[in-house]
Image (cartoon, rainbow, N blue to C red):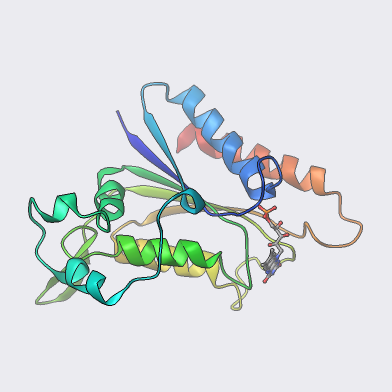
Length: 198
Ligand SMILES: Cc1cc2nc3c(=O)[nH]c(=O)nc-3n(C[C@H](O)[C@H](O)[C@H](O)COP(=O)(O)O)c2cc1C
């Protein structure tokens, strides 16, 4: 049995997010294909995600023991490390993703949980796991250098040791004259295919 962590970062009301229209279908298809797996939904806007405060740094870099497992701050990092697969769903905001996702990444980038330091430099502790990033964008970016969200997510997940990363981008949805429903359907088709082999 695999544990899937479905991380959602969007403020839009239920049913309004193009990103979630695709990512929810991905999860639906995944569940159909993997009924034995456990999928946990983490809606970041419903969590106590904050910017790191001075007291938090001691916990991020401090010892990882029985006491640290009780820390409300570190619960996200432990939860992340326990999962086998990750589904990130976040729209493009200002060339990246919503800031709450970066704040969450600051919570899960924890020494001794998601990576460690060695004499040869930092080493990721989440080797062999996989992730998909589902993103809707107003314009078209592909792999353009000014796209910072997907590239950052891939880099930090790589730092944790996660090398198997897919991206489903639903682009051009804010371009005048574009058929948005068609774009979403294209995204859903890609998501349904990927959900079979994820
Ligand atoms: C705060 C904010 C910032 C945005 N910044 C960008 C941007 O930099 N580039 C872009 O192509 N679209 C940008 N958009 C448009 C969204 O990426 C686009 O509308 C997307 O489809 C939203 O996905 P959603 O329906 O899941 O929220 C932005 C939208 C918002 C609300």
